[in-house]
Image (tube, rainbow, N blue to C red; front, side, top):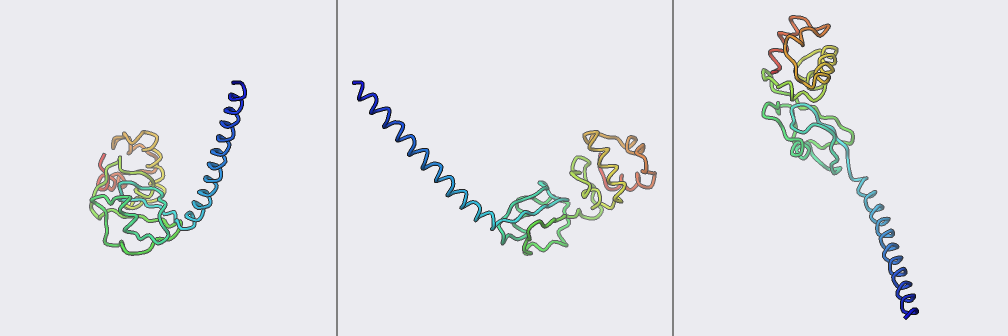
Length: 164
């Protein structure tokens, strides 16, 4: 009886080692496979008039249309300058502009580029975006008027371009 328990324990340990060894070898094999696939990938960033801005990992031969299917164009996107069949390159940055004379909601501002695209000067866009971010995008026009460097002309322009 004692010999059976010892033999059973040795069998269990041996089979566990075989399973563990095959798992380790298998994961190493998959790692090499993934590194080959990594060479076939590109990293592309998209910002602006899209629902899901940010960085995407795509296949090397992807087109702008493939990226736009993932990022989803907003209804007020200006697509007149986009070539949907153009190939994408690694570390490329795409900015989708908004249509002229359309307003964007303050909550749709995801970064400084969104403000630049609607025609706000860079130094003002930086100040405004930092202020919006600090206030969790819950602001009034009177609060924006108090930001240093934003005058009456800028406020009038912002009211034409932004909805609060």
